[in-house]
Length: 304
Image 1 (cartoon, rainbow, N blue to C red):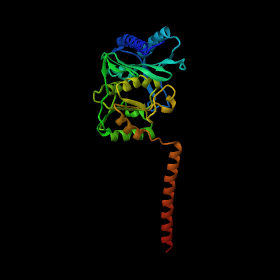
Image 2: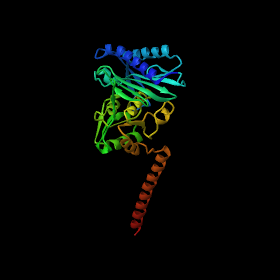
Image 3: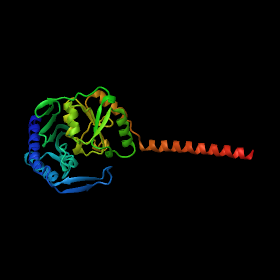
Image 4: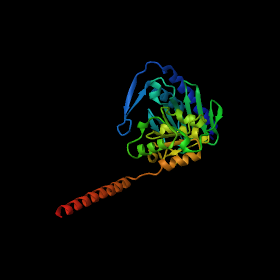
């Protein structure tokens, strides 16, 4: 029978291998290619040989050790995602940071059981920092237990997002602006590292993001929740392999339950497309009525 300890130990082996592949490329000339996805707010994203070789290496380790397990990777896609255990991989989360020499990228490794993240690793190889979250066991930073603390009210909180440009115009952008108004200070540019510092109680309280891939957030869930924080989609639902399409990559991570409840009150009141249409019709009707009344009054006065 497979144990959580066995899987967590193997996840650390994968992170060790990722470091071995990535570090020789750090702050050295490297060719950067562009991936373009036109339906995303930020259509272009970079990819390097370091991303690809890292995923190749750790996928091979999984195939060799656990050939019946599934794999879901950013660079090389999906296999056997209906398996009991699925490994979700982002070899370099924050490639833009990596290629510009900023050490706030990370390798993300998650193990899912029946679609739910049970083990997560955020590994920052340059700073020699590794967060390991195990469901029901807690979260450690380089072997020492960490806990998310955070402030008690949203108005006092420090909120991270990778960039304000990751939110679609309309509902997402509007709700994000409301969050910016509700917190003490919005901050940008940390990628997965933001979730790690929330989990560690270092002073950040909340992360709000959208347009994420499954590989961008699965590893973060056990790290945040193992530290006593709360992480969900914008409607408060669990983040799993099976509801990714419904969550649409919209995530919120908070240091405590109170902050999460306040954030969901802002982020979770969904507007349906029909609501938009009805609202628009009402506004248009009022406008036309006002114009009609004004024209009628003017016409009546002119006849007098």
